[in-house]
Length: 483
Image 1 (cartoon, rainbow, N blue to C red):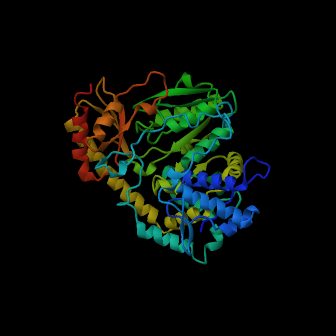
Image 2 (cartoon, one colour; image 1 turned 45 degrees about the vertical axis):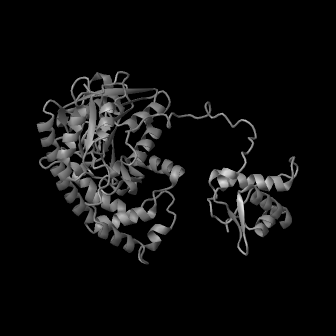
């Protein structure tokens, strides 16, 4: 028996039977009731609506005659097999509200990175930043979950902390994650977020009042560009070269500068130390704040690593956003934001108004997983796997497509590929998909009016190393005849 409630209007034209019949027809037609589902109890529905049971029974019998319901002896009423198609069209109450002039942002209009449905079942998924179950220690995560649900930790995640985060997770972030990037922070300078995206939104909301100017890399992260364009009067799109985002006078006037220095999104080049120092100096001159998105430090190649911008900042101008989703699983939706205490206090207050805090259960499980050093083990496994896959992809492209330019070979979870002049990556993606190969067209990463079409991204977080060579060969075969 299904619960079912709807308003009836005794002053409305038409009988109560007709209103009950129309309401159930709407529910069946909309899919709220599936074929074979039990219909609401006539007795309980009559009590809830304040009408006689006979009124409800007559309405139901009419629906049986119509083919929407079927009556079963000693069992009651059920949705007929073809109930939805038998339901009569419901008359409209008039034109719906016009939303076109009421919504303040273009959030639904911007284009993100296109991915075909069912990409996971493709034999050659060159997709970036996804979860590889072959690398993840399922048993260890299950153990952390089991421990979190024990009596010892139950009170730590079942209570409403309002705006506070799990202190154990904060401690793990400041002792295990941040030192790897040269970043030191006190607990009051760290905020747990729902992924790095939440950190970007909080920062933009607090630092981009109407009329302000933001700056970011070109090409760059599409979601950040959409966010800045929705809030700022102007967004500076700053070119990127082999040393990262260029630092020059075009950045002047920006109130907030967004940058991905470790692995530039999407070209994956690392910003040189000279550029990092130049950017800090320019921010000081312009009284600007830098938002550093260090979204995949675990994908760094072996060898000397450049410190985070936050580690070089002595004036508190750099906000540091990190993600646990990339190094654990995207569905976990945990990240963090590090900054000066006054900013973090305001970000915490704003986050409370939005969602109070990220789920306490997720925070405690992640903390226990990290405290047991399972996260460290996972990072090592990921680095080795990504290095091997990166090497296989670079080698395969060098042989099959020697004229294509590749960046990201030094580190990162993918490659940024520049195809030959005249190549359209959207057409290439469609042709490659027909051969079982999934890539990410690169035009969406550009925000200028004139967008180059020959760039695309190849991720290798989920494709096995042994499939990469054949996948590249099929991709290059798909490109034949497209230029």
